[in-house]
Figure 1 (cartoon, rainbow, N blue to C red):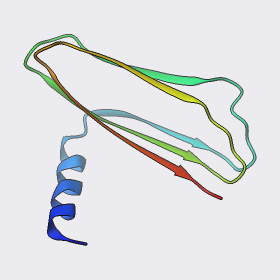
Figure 2 (figure 1 turned 45 degrees about the vertical axis):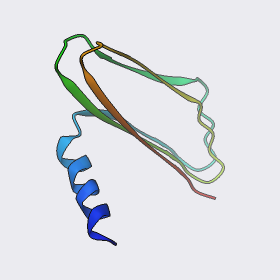
Figure 3 (figure 1 turned 120 degrees about the horizontal axis):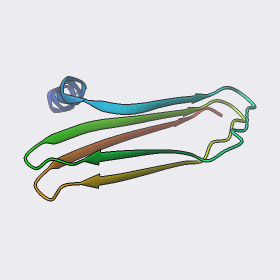
Figure 4 (figure 1 turned 180 degrees about the vertical axis):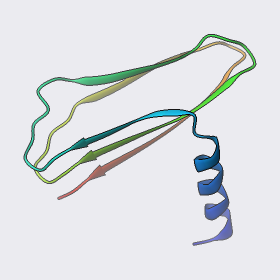
Amino acid sequence: MCQLKIAFAALNAAVASDGTFIYVPPGVRCPRELSTYFRINQAKTGQFERTILVADQGAYISYIEGLFQHLDAILISYMLLWLKS
């Protein structure tokens, strides 16, 4: 792995402040649409969220992510979707 990738991975781990983790076991169909909503109300602040969704073999999930941020705020979002086949 190159040094730049290591540096960005370390930065991501260091500043993550919020997020979601969802695991759906093999063959399970999630009966509802799942959603999260992130909101930043203050100016000159930041939020660094990450979302990790894991759908095991034969699993089903529907996910919506919403957000609101103040004009002078920073929001950095990272999503990882892992599908096992």
